[in-house]
Image (cartoon, one colour):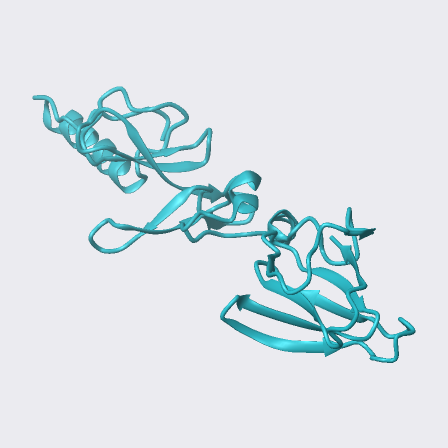
Length: 226
């Protein structure tokens, strides 16, 4: 269209009236295509913004334009706009067509379904992976002389750890999700030469304790990788 039509037919002679009717019909069938918004606006009217290449619809309150989609004139395709909300027939949000912030993916707490790029998935996995994966990162072996025999301890971190424990005459390691639900994992040898200690992985948030096999010896050794 070369100009907007107000879609109001004024009282004119027949040829002029017919011209106005034709212009009004052309405006309707072309979705009011024009580089600037119509001077006269109606609730729920369409306007194809030829500058932005976006099809818009006037709000029911006639106070704003609602963007519907992008019309790519170079490829003759309709493109959904980023941030378009997917809803049920009742208008309840069911998802989002578009990206969400990197921080949202890395937090891992959002419940709104949306498009996600491989890069976003990678960033979220890295952000949500425990920083101390066993044997990497800041984990290192250290001697731990604070542990007592036959005492439950709790790995209250979100990463697995490893313990190395033995008594001179043999040790048993118990590991479980609670102090009342556990399994016997390993026993070190009982010959007193310390050549076969127990190496046990303690899963995140699990409990463990070490007890000696030969109660005649109280020599207790323990190292921890955390």
